[in-house]
Image 1 (cartoon, rainbow, N blue to C red):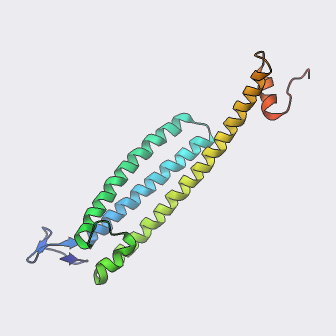
Image 2 (tube, rainbow, N blue to C red; image 1 turned 90 degrees about the vertical axis):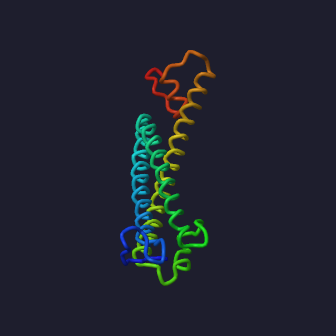
Image 3 (cartoon, rainbow, N blue to C red; image 1 turned 45 degrees about the vertical axis):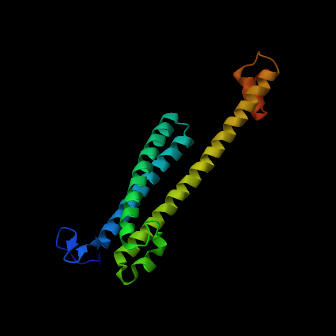
Length: 176
């Protein structure tokens, strides 16, 4: 039996048997939304760490992201278990919820599902930004290493000025 917004006997059962409350599913989706917001905040901190070459911040955000993603996985498993009560399988996608619930679909579920989609898009955008930042940082490091290698290949007697000159193509030697 599905209960949409009405109450139950207080023990999750009615005379007809166990009750699935759609509020529980909406609440489970809201927990996922909160976790996605946390993940987005971690990714923003990570992006700042990348920009400022702050290895400690990057390391901390990697650990934090893993923690949030683990918790997010648990929240998704809970949602899937709840979906197993009302759909043919627990693998029912959220965009199939209207068909699965039919007239029992609530505005609360519609709102929670839309918010989850929105938060997931925001996380995807932060990941895209961080990938671009990482790519730019790797390019900078690659240019530096190439400059260092070019300076070393000309002889082991090189100064930091020669490395910078090889990297940038501009000599900063006042005697040159």
